[in-house]
Image 1: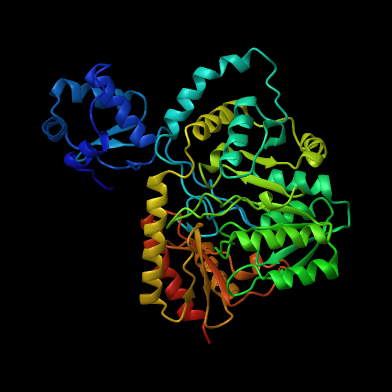
Image 2: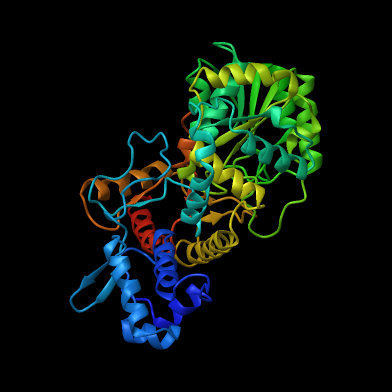
Length: 475
């Protein structure tokens, strides 16, 4: 169990809110820190005496705030530890992004580090965003609650977001979905007939391919070059295969992490138009820059025939379960019909939360961006120390490293670590081998995706286990 010191807590709390009683401010601020994961479940809070000295509050104020925390389930009293932060009911296991690995996460009770998932945790302040949205909810509760294309404030906010990025967009071009995969699936239904071909770079994000295949599409692959999208090979494949659609990831490609410049985007869009192929542009990672904000336009700025897919899962929080389509005007009706064939709309409360976040200019929080950058740099340094033969890339954005292994043993490594999991030992690690990201479902054995979005403590536990397993599988 960890412990937070009183001076550290004082820095995290900031200045008191004089508009409410001091005990109430302290209770609400502490509850927010715990609910948002800034004070972890099981962390011992400072003693009342230490808190009084560090915060400059009375003993009565601190005692009452701690009591309020205990009453609402956000703290408990433990002999020898004092007041301990907790989440009501305890943290829920799982919640990670599933990949097609034959399972849905670790066994109950196992403490595996899940590195099949590349997604950040909820940022600080998410609880407050939901509380604010609750005040707006009554306006929508007067009706039946169905908004198949999204509530108007969110569609306006998303249209303004694209316009601000240099792609003029009206709210009528925005279709809200229940996530990026729903958006990809809707786009596939709108532009692909059963048995038609969708072209994709390999490696690529496997869940998007599954969403398209579920509609009956066939896939064809074009390899990514060492520096990212190989436009010569893409042009040749478009001319030879003549696919009805192509899945494109120009923004911090998952899993490779590369970013395409404007010149490349313009050429890619022109090649798609020349082949009469509809580009499905996955911008899920567009806001995940780590070093400097990229000075590029959305790819749809270079052609009126591109369908853009976006999501709040990586830039805000996966628990919002919200995505969207930015539709070309001539495809808007077809995309809307396809979307409505899947479900009748996303939850209103979450849409209000996202609308408020976008309207205030918030995408990836600075705290999250800093933590991701630090984790990336730390992981690259640790790999150089413990696995010097591995060659990770240095992505300017995204959530993972794409590592080149000295031997084609990616699947063997993942299986070795999974065997540790099935034996129910501690420090087991779940990995997605390179073949998971291959369009063909096999190959890429020289590659491994290593996410760095998890808490540093999890990564620190995972890398030694990976290094030990690697020593056992190399020949």
